Amino acid sequence: MSVDVEPWGVAPDGHPVERWTLRHEAGAVASVATWGATLLALRVPVAGGLRDVVLGFDALGPYLGAHPYVGAAVGRWANRIAGGRFTLDGTVHVLARNAGDHHLHGGERGLSRQVWHATGGENADGPWLQLSIVSPDGEDGFPGTLRTSLRYGLRADALRLDWTATADRATPVNLTHHAYFNLAGGGDVLGHRLRVLADRFLPVDAGLIPTGELRPVDGTPMDLREAVAIGDRIASADPQVRLAGGFDHCWVIADAPGPLRSAAELVAPDGSACLRVATTEPGLQVYTGNGLDGTLRGRGGAAWPRHGAVCLEAQRFPDAPNRPAFPDAILRPGETYRQTTVYAFG
Image (cartoon, rainbow, N blue to C red; front, side, top):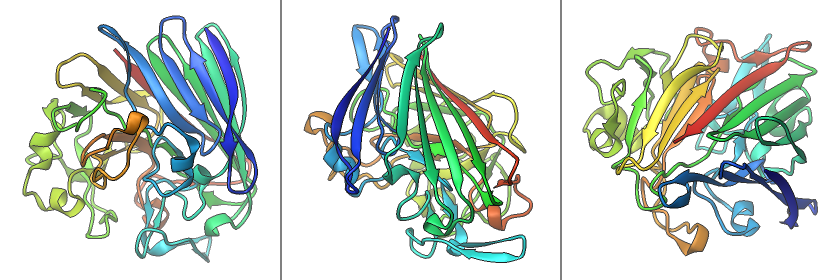
């Protein structure tokens, strides 16, 4: 069991970037960069050795450029806010618009394109890494200074993420992790079998903004209560699938944040690896790598094809600041935002 750190380049603002590596005595290895608190690699035991089950680049350079949030810690607001604006306590706040007319994943800067401060150590469960960052008042248009902490804990059979955040003014907060999972270690994920423990999902409009409806999954390709091959479902002519080019929707795991509960299960086509997701969050955004097109190349120069991975992003509901009927996502002074998400592998 060990925690190691090494220099890993320099950010555009001149801050040094570190790469931390957590090793568990049971065999699992996780690598994390302080740039964007990014999960660079997650190698887990499978028959015949270790397999890396997340997409990542070999060096810092591609992470500094344009990429679809590969492995990043995402905030202040994960997912979309319609029109890049919301009204809070009678004041209109205008945000960075970086997805057409809408705000996405924290904006132009966000928490994923900054250097976090890190410390590491070990306990009885395994090695851990604690990362923290301060987002100043007004960054990307959000009110208040936000102090965020993310702790990675590597266990014998799981990677646990514990988030906290506090603010000195009322502000929307929605944090998530944007790991791209491929349990086969390469190729596409169309043969992966996916189960999501939800009987409702949030339908979206052409801008992928929720309509406000919590629609039952019955009779739709979004009914994933029994494990099905991803490719079988996203080949559907259903209008919701066609709008996104696959899945890019939020499933309703619960009506409010609460205790840790099972949310999803993903299994490699040959059954050699399995991922189970548990979270305290009410929503799970499933994104089937619809925007990957083979131009980005990861470790060893491997091209990432369309649907080359699936993201399972635990979070509050998209556009919640504009949807009073959605679970409250406003953090106020004196409160602490808390989230736990566990990725268990086997």
